[in-house]
Length: 358
Image (cartoon, rainbow, N blue to C red; front, side):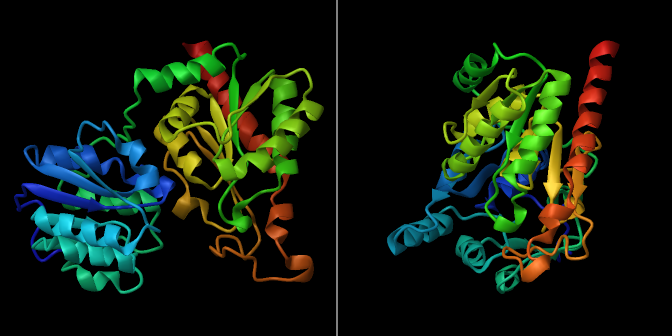
């Protein structure tokens, strides 16, 4: 707990330090309207990786972005530290909890520097207050919301606003409007190899739903995920030859991706940033969880279906499988297509019920 109650303080300049990753930034978004409600006249700044900065552009409760390049030259880092010092922040929130963000927090010289119990690499040493109830056992979306609770606004609605412009919305409509509904989004990629459910499994689940429900599919992801998306596209044409598939992988900006996810009816995905972005756009997700824990890392809300491996090593957060032989990546095989198909069918059936009721 902070030595000074956040419900009692006043602040004119606030710094949020949450540079990455996509899913974490999205889950922290609901704090912006809370901070604006608590400090209506304050100037709110956010330190963000340059590649993610677009996501926050135009947010009505954010006054300033401080983008930086993580792998940029030392001169860029030095300039960032100077900028942080010059702004004379009253409060700094380190929501990342790494050594480099600890240095950023110290650079603000804010009299109140707040961190979380999930802090690593000694970053807590740069803070003078740690919010309780934010350890690794707590779901990530609840960890960030603890800040709202400490501000006395824990009962406020959670709004994950991504400010989409007419251009992004028109771009998505141009590519998706002629597709039949319901529209199935698929994100088969992930940064960690241990998060990547086999593309063949995605094809089996999606192909079955497309044939049975008459779905069209749109594939999404970043440029590095184009090869797996091309493979999935070919498989879907084999498994559901009469259904339409649009592959937008590597072709979207972050806001275009948000606009696409906003127009899909459900997203089938690994544990990834697009999963959380879809949830922020109020699109139900079927999330596949192998090396990560669905409760800790999944989006909140009963509208989602999160399917986890039942092996004891599931949720270990290992970027590389520690086992060899028959146990190597066994979670990918254990998590069956039948379980994921059943989850997808439940969401589609539920949406059908909503449409009939309307």
